[in-house]
Length: 623
Image (cartoon, rainbow, N blue to C red; front, side, top):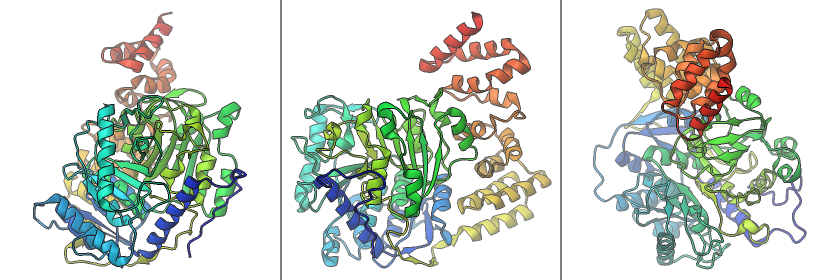
């Protein structure tokens, strides 16, 4: 039986006239999602595929009797997902070895097959007497089409194809193009033959799975630009008829985001609130969440909003399913309660996470890893409520209210929207909702899912078998490459401790090298083995951004960390923020002139905020 706590007054009281039509519709939609999830058994296995043809073939093996996560074989997405899902077995599947002649047809067949059909998605739903849960829009030439297949097949949604020439994510879509996008979606909805014109009818959820600008221009907006996911799903007068989510990126990334939404539980919450408990800011604190959520089976961790507390909390990474984070700032910085930090200081996520991020401008250009939003997404966030332009504080729904709604089965992204009559910012505005709009964050145990044992297939090979073979190879022919392969397989199946042991064995045999060092580094970070981490880091020929992030978050506060390692790895394009962390130590050990020399060197290539900061710091020393 589905637990549906419609009134949870411990978080916040309802208006005297009861829930709005939209809020009731959100709860009803969530209850529909929960009912479908409860009826679909899940196998405790993960299947890794090498290409799209194999991916579609694997999805077509889903049925109403069983389904399971399917991911493209790409790190760190695989190991991140596996650590959260905890499967009995991780399989690697052989390629079907064929090209896809008609992508649209192949995608539709896979979705229909997942619902026991043999061709038409609509016919498959009709045979099961299942009204479609929503509509997913994509394009056969866009990489995010694989995520579209997963969400349509996983949720029981219609699949529709639209144009793919809307422009890059960081641009602003013109009013003409915005209108064309809305009309094309409306036309597809009309041809689908389902009720969609109002909130509370058959179709209340739309998902865009393609690359397009995060900000758009519309005549119905009081101010432009606005968020693409708040423009799509509204009629020409601005009235909402559906809530919209958005996936974009590579095949591996969009599929990961979809599979996280479909298969992961969300029982561990992490809160970081940087706002003062005064004035209007107090409304956006955590209230009684820390005491109340455990009553619904949710584990809660709350940290203070200072940079010192944040840096202590993120040593070794953050392990949570849902993150709530409040801050002020722009796309390229965050204002904490005590100081400004760069996006690179955001937590590294050890598991996939859904995110409510109360911060201005974070999703202005979510493709760029150097922005706040891009950093979060690159670290494994798969559902994200955030702003793409200056939203004003009141545009955000307070965290306590979002939690109250999600505990009442309102889907996560929908819970982040104001409804008409609740707030002036219920109009079309600037908050974007990335991810699956049907994803729930319910009380633990609210949805009684059935889990089945893993099942072997002749096309599968378990990662355990491959790891065993690789370990034997390290015995027969020990080399950096052999150890790297074994360590990578162990990490992919979630065995960090064993991967560390294999690294130690490699050290005794004298085969340590850059390949095995890169493979083991994330495991050493999560295990907080600082000495081994520094050793492995020193063996890398080149350092990737995430590896430098791990370095700073794990060891930068340690007095025994070699100072030159940190100086050599000041992170672009915000080297100033890192230098300020170690400036006192550089002065003490090497003198003031050493700091000035670093500043002068970095000023040669510094730009924007980083350049201005270095200039101010240099002036401070010269004065």
